[in-house]
Length: 91
Image (cartoon, rainbow, N blue to C red; front, top):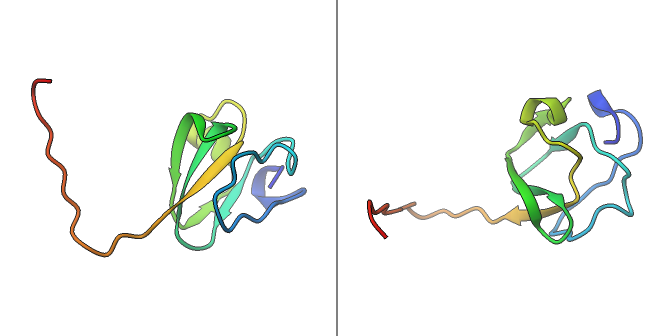
């Protein structure tokens, strides 16, 4: 939504979108109805990224400290198996 509290024009996204600038000039609130999305503040999945889980973000710009707005997004497929990560101290 262009305005806070889900007001103004809105755009519904159900898949990856590499450039949302033609749909909305700004974005101040967001509702994730299902799944998870990684949103980016620049087109083509670049810039700062934020994980958006299912929920309502009535003023996500100030909550997440985004400087501009969502310019692109990617769906995050839900993985049903185990998650595993190993982190090493040295390169």
